[in-house]
Length: 139
Image (cartoon, rainbow, N blue to C red):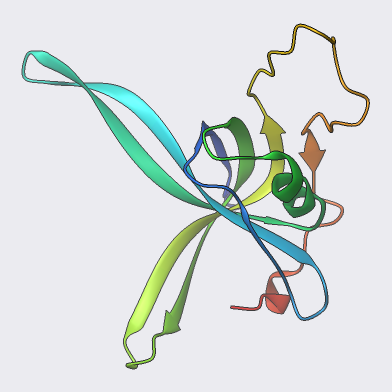
């Protein structure tokens, strides 16, 4: 039976993207994304926030580094990936990340002097044709 690993997130960037390069020169961008929902506890409604580690490659990473900033609202289409490593003390560490295939800026730019910019990218990127192979990761 086939399986599916698919994630759709809409949330706000917790920090500016951190951009690095693989040894082969492919760009990687990492940032945290907050998603929130309202949950009822007893008689009161509370907001519950989850934080996600987002990783983008190639064109999506380039776009994120150039156009995305802390606080912006984005849509991410990707998959869940968990990796592990040994720290400097030999302790096994784990991290769960969302590997993004599509990133879309949903923040509304409010500029009353012009309708749209020809130089700004619209943020709709699909990376299925240019996703970096997972065996070339620098971590």
